[in-house]
Length: 146
Image (cartoon, rainbow, N blue to C red; front, side, top):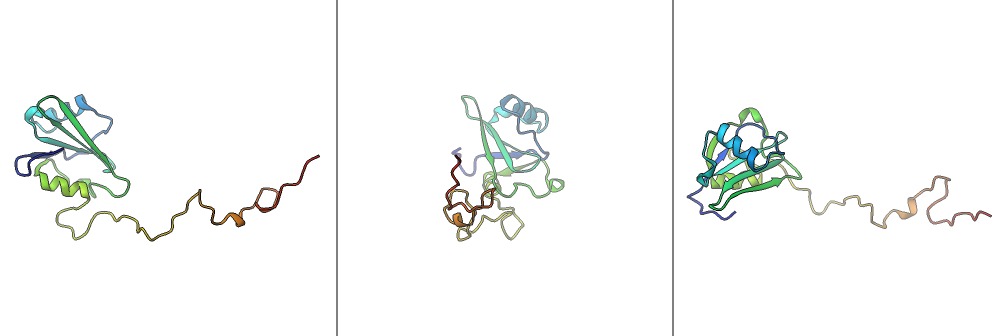
């Protein structure tokens, strides 16, 4: 998505949207829900019920395009009661994609610190503490059956 900063209009659909919708479903939602012309070249933004996924529908002279983003942490919208259908600018969409909400002092979510140790099932640390079902440790050879 490469658009000139000041020339693009962005329309946010103010209700949760079913993210199974594709081109025809989002086209119909744009026509009926937003009462807008999807062929105008504007961006139409739809957010999932959990607010962890966003789809953007737009027309680029040769056909429709859908751009999607799914968050691993955080949400695009904190409270659906405060969201309404409205037009916003390209900068507001970029802020929303980055998790920055105008009027708030900090991001809606924080990434985990890189210095924290995370549990990994592939690390060799802690091998000595493994216990088998029969009570033997993981280092002792299993008794031979004969």
